[in-house]
Length: 132
Image (tube, rainbow, N blue to C red; front, side):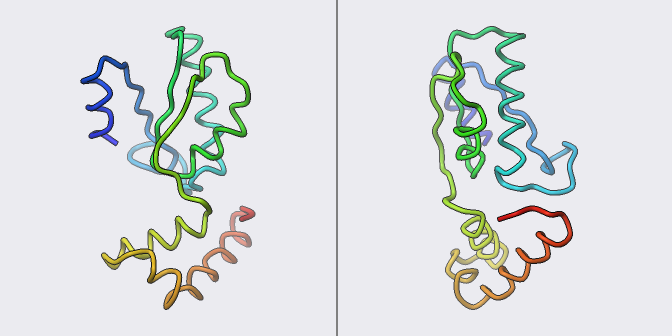
């Protein structure tokens, strides 16, 4: 995301780059790729609105967070738009991550390793009660 931030800064935008849940040095044990993080985005927008009071906020992300934000942020007068690269489903995220691990495309998770991906979803449902 640093490369994107540099582009926005170069064009005169201010940039807030919070550390997402279970990434970097932030708290959290599990990254849910939008299920829980969307509420975090709403809180970041509220914080910006109360501390910086911008006329307009644009969101940009590379994950399912954008999908969740559109439903959880609701009508917010300062949220003027969002964009980025979003996955269509949690399974698409899993397929992509499996492919990244083996340095191939998401096809590996969709085909050969699909049973493992599906088993991982069952474990998540049982262990941390996240519904997919």
